[in-house]
Length: 146
Image (cartoon, rainbow, N blue to C red; front, side):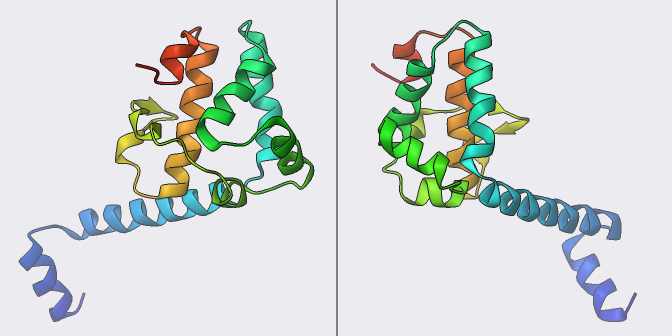
């Protein structure tokens, strides 16, 4: 390690291992965010349907949640599925519900309110709502109705 790097490391009072962990964490998050952006809504939608139906909920309830979060109606959803829109495209065209920020908690091992990448946060909002629906939560609670 060069003298400058050692001085920098000492000035931060962190070890080389800690620096490696920090760099790895940011690299993993960046690649994770990119992977989510490129994923198509059409590839995930059937899994959403299976999840809610398996738990006794309906496609209409699923669509109600998606509409609440994004503003898309059934026809627009079908177009996005047919066009194999990526999540990036999906959320770029959405009108996010003003109460979406009320969606908090953990989903897929991530605390939603701590996610920095806006697109990843929006996808996790959707995941969280669908998870709550599948767990039998009342629709008023899922949709954050006062």
